[in-house]
Length: 185
Image (cartoon, rainbow, N blue to C red; front, side, top):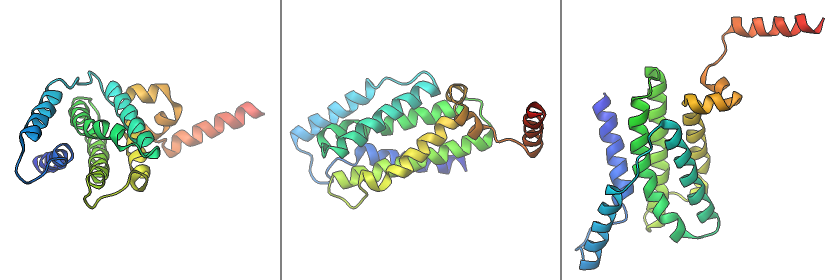
């Protein structure tokens, strides 16, 4: 099952990163651009922690979002492709994070949503049928928020994220309610 998920993610990743290429004959300038793209990937700096990766993801999302809001596809183009590399890195960091199997599965689903959403935007940007950024922005934001909630470093900084990461049991809610009532009397 994991192989199918990994193959699926890789297929989306390849589409996101290679989606800009023309399927026709490659010219000399396209060959140089392809070599430059491979060189960029070789020099891609990998995040050292899940927290660092998620912060970079938010920065890339913000750059892409703001560029499309200003109709500046040139500024959005590079970061849109960088997202694919980063999502691959984040997948590896999540697998090593020590999260429960359920949390890892949820995180991988969020990453798949991000691959699909950013990939659809990339397709549209290159004249294919896809989505505009505004059409998928809510999905992107929700998936990023969900990933942040699973990140222990983010949860420690935000009580909202901690609440999302560790739902309270009925007994914990009753205990909290009792202590509020006892303190009020």
